[in-house]
Image (cartoon, rainbow, N blue to C red; front, top):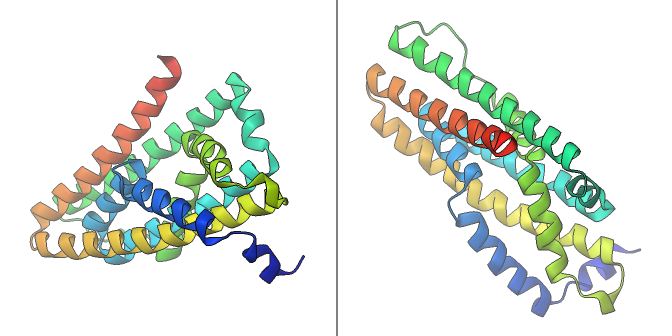
Length: 218
């Protein structure tokens, strides 16, 4: 199938409503936004942008799973869903502990610990998004609403819609990470405030992780 023909399958009357809905959902306060904001403010613009783009890139995995129907199989299995949720909760708690360690280092004046590289932060963002079962189920429910069955090639339509979602998300999360990092630099003119921003990031990650864990046992 030629790419030009595939892209033509997504008409303006199909793509425009999808992009409007996607932008609104991306801008709405949620776990990903909080993580990008907290990392940007605590570790700077590079960290916020890298982690934000990682989160967005994780959407490619959810798009692929939704297209292949794997998400439906996981959602239909309570044990599989609970296991994936537990893994996601554990990972977020681990990220929170890492931020807590950075906060303590700044508070104690011990700054020899090297900050994460942009690549490491990008990978952390990908993993944080990819193992989030709620995002997986969201894509499974969201993408098919904008698929036009009469046009055929339904899996390919879902793949293109997922790519469109990722592109708009990259622009929004990139800007969010950049400006949150700029704000963090303005606020963190002293080590005490910098430590507070790291503690804030730790609280966000730990809170999100614990909430996922409580959802499992609740």
